[in-house]
Amino acid sequence: MQTVLSKRDAFPDASGVALAAQSFADEPLGRIGTLEVRLARHEDEIAAAQEVRYRVFYDELGAKHDTSLAPERRDADRFDAICDHLLVVDTALPGPEHKRIVGTYRLLRQERAVAAGGFYSEDEFELKNLVARHPGRRFLELGRSCVLAEYRSKRTIEVLWQGIWAYVNRHDIDVMAGCASFHGTVPAAHAEALSYLHHHCRTDGVWDVRAVPGRYSSMDLMPKEAISAKSAIVAMPPLIKGYLRLGARIGDGCVIDEDFGTVDVFVVLPVKEISSRYINYYGSEAQRFAA
Image (cartoon, rainbow, N blue to C red; front, side):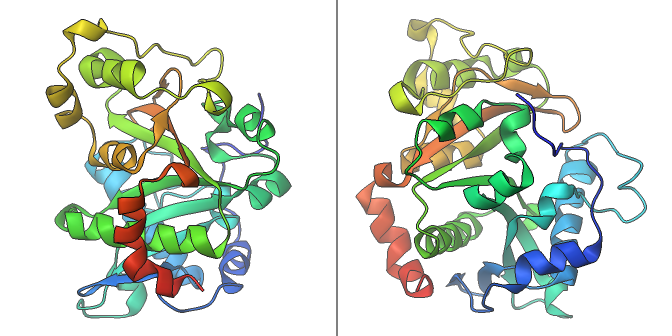
């Protein structure tokens, strides 16, 4: 499967990014304490989100440096121009608002992906096939999730999900999907967690999705009876645990991303499968932002 856009593509001109964000209103999509979540509104805010991504992915987690990104210290690719950028802003910080961004999530709606030639994650997983099996449903790809180290708390995750839930309601999204990552490039280092996902959390039937041929690595690394559910879940990244709590399922196979130094799995979350208690929890605050 081929997509015309790749992970390592250069960042386009600034005007293309600005146009992608200007059609959205300025209001917040959620708020907890001093943390506010909303969409990026202009070029400076998208650039600031890219700087946050660079600090997390490259400086902290050791992604391989692309020489084209180094001078500006921004994690950027061509998908940024067609995505909406969800931002967590700490309103208590001093300085201009775009300097208060402490977390970000990149959101790619199906109609924009189709117009641009494909989804970001099609380089790793057969998302195109999954979408084709559901012609009446609207997909949203979530990716490039990161939060600065000092803000990695339950409160920040909750305000992000307030924003996502408001966005999903605003755009009538039926299915959320995207890659989530384990740190490092050796699946065996995450054998118990990956095996738990394989045995207990797999997509099936009409929702099944598989890693692309040539990049497929098995997640079936331990027999089912040898897995401790408790230790497997503890070993998972918080983002993956959060998805599972909401009712997400995991595709078949993982993919090693040598550039970002991760083992990626694919998450599928039909909105109708989200537990009602989480809809009530996030929706009680976020629903008023969704209109």
